Length: 99
Picture 1 (cartoon, one colour):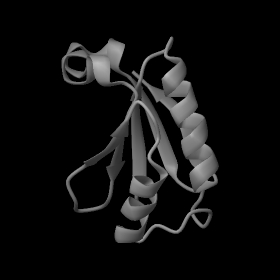
Picture 2 (tube, helix red, strand yellow):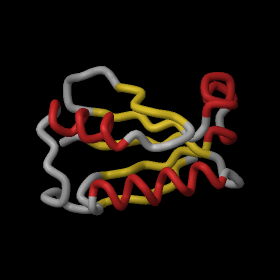
Picture 3 (spheres, one colour):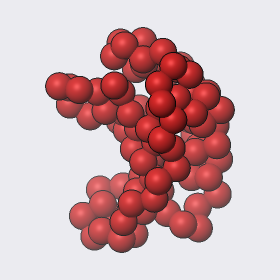
């Protein structure tokens, strides 16, 4: 089952905007992990000025960076279509914050 990781930071309004837009788009049917980049120096080095960064994960496939700064609905829908996603039909598990 495809899922998403949103690389974010706590004070970032664009990050909150992207999370809300993603939740609206996928209807709560996909796992969305929110990772605070500031909690890990490696993530800060990788994503610092790019956040928010949305990465899609699908079983057996390398992670795909889908968009940053603003949600690209087309890229998210394309990712789900290619990886067997069907929004709204999966058990919801969204909004977990990981550090």
